[in-house]
Image (cartoon, rainbow, N blue to C red; front, top):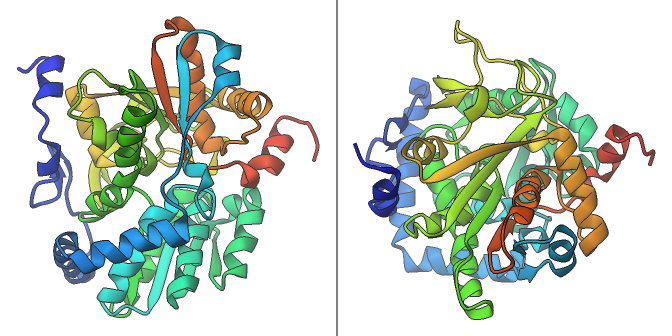
Length: 409
């Protein structure tokens, strides 16, 4: 068996997933028969787009002119001073149009959908950032847009719901199950089964059935590519550790991927620890889950011994999900990426601390990654460098955070 160091050194990241959509034993294509044809069409179209200079030029142009790339690499001087220890840098995805990394993938998939001749887009959303990004991109490209969102998340993220509708999207409330992200995915899949001829499903995270985990990862790779160049230009070397929150895992894999074959850079994904690590009180799949097949792929899932999906909880709607992307499951298994969790209380403290020290209000999802870095930094020397993916801004969360913390609004 390979040691952890040997595994880190031997990763051939460009070969993943394999032709069947597997990252080691995780991933695959578990889909209704009616979706196999559109999934195959999507995989074929994407394979062509990857090597099509016109597609890549259009995508790069839209990222620059519409989304606002490149995003900055920012030294959090006051936060670093407050915590002591390691220097903390932030990769500023929160500065993108619509306020989060989600627009990278939404743009790429929407351009791809137009190439496939699709006129209607559907998407799921939890925190609302993917929904807003999708609605915005559809307005940009002249596509009909329907967003599925759990009733509970609609309550938590009312400002984003209005933003989606303002951009012309129809927001459909999902009242089944827990009325959160898992249930929104289910309804979006049902829609796609019945309307795949004219509809493309812009899946919002690096999960689901093949080829979605690969496509979403690739459209977010720009995060890590930029960060790699920026660290060398601004700092003169790469960071020692990189932190990112992990729900499905799109922002994290987008940043981590560029550094996977650099074993001296430690990668840390931070899940939602919720109230506590007990059934129904968290969304930390690697701390409380088991391997299973869920919503299109084989991965770590929060489930009971009968295979029924457990209820989840997180203060952040975007991390309140029962499964994790299969590529994350693979890297966790070989020891290349470490996974931790932050509790609701720790995330809320990070939310407040970054706001007070830097004047930057992070999304509650992002606050989990920050919490992990804030816990780690004081343990390290001043020569140590930590990078945190600031995956989204917290405008959408201020009302819910104030309610949870009992501070009024």
